[in-house]
Length: 497
Image (cartoon, rainbow, N blue to C red; front, top):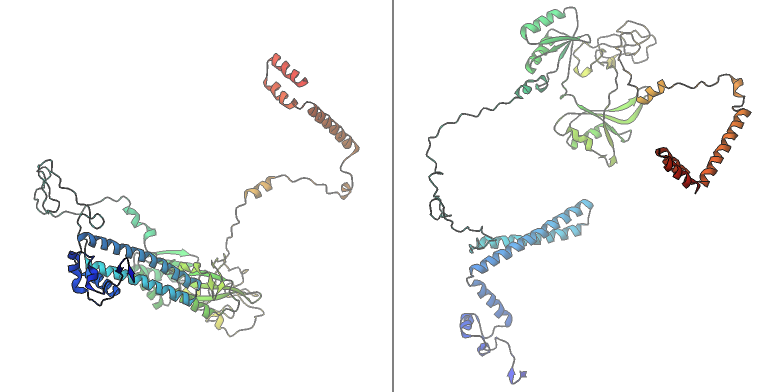
């Protein structure tokens, strides 16, 4: 096809078709041009030859900036994509959508890796004056005292004699002593580690036992507490040696527990009443808690179980996080701290009071038959008709009966009365008539009714006067505050007007 006497054809049809290209540019690309090349091949060869040519410093700086922007953009896309994937996984999104998002994330990461590898191959920016890739270089400044220019890149600095330092010998410096006026607080008894006491049971020859302990451990302190001798050792090692000595002499004693060694007692509510305790223990231990014991609370009078589980948790780094549990086996639960009632504790081993069987080193006693065995191991399983107390030797009750004379009494002090209770106690009570005959008499008489009618008529008259003179109240207040006779007269005239 011809157009104005000229024909259009491809650039690669003949070398004469490139006559419009200047000779100086044509000479550089002639080796790569063939007579039978297509436009696509020609473009690809041109781009390849262009990339192989050396670039200027400005082009390298632009390429570094472009690659940095690509990395920043794809990092933002990748961060957004990771957040979307995380939300889909939490909310239960479809697997296909999650896989699509993962593929999209891989494409972003691939682009970031490609741009980073290109930046590594390019190296640092060659343009030293580029403020984006290099710090601004300050101009050479003259030192006013020396009158010389200071070389910023030189390791040596020219300073004035006033600022020059002399070479001093290396002297060993003594540590700086600082005064701490609170150092005595570190020696307080509250900061020292707590050593649990050993409670020796009081017997006839307790003095000999204490003398032996004092001869071996003279810093030990002894006190009499609730029928036991509290032996306080000065170190954990001495405490263990005293325990071995008492066991060797076959003495009865009870060990106290340190506050840190006592387990955390909690109550788990809103679980099924037939919940397996071993299963519950396994669930709690799988969450990182060390469970010592689980018992289900029950009503001893009715012999029924409660849906409440008492759990002993060993104290460690995360034992308090058990209060953060909200569900067990997909059931909403409630965890509360165990509130111990103010009652006397009785030992299941020796049947004595104020301690538990876990720390008891006394001889066992049975409250049923007074035998040298625990009550749960007694052969008597039925109810005893006329039991004998092993503490007071009284008949008709066991040692666990709260009415026993030897049973310890707790002083439950009454709570302080509130302000409303105190006010109520000082308020005089009205004297109501107690005679039934007086209740039948009318509460009002005819004289009272007539007085009430008179008062009602007077109030009506006052109301009519107020309606007739609406400014009566205002003028009366003004008369009260005014002492001048003429002003009072003017106010009265206003009342008539």
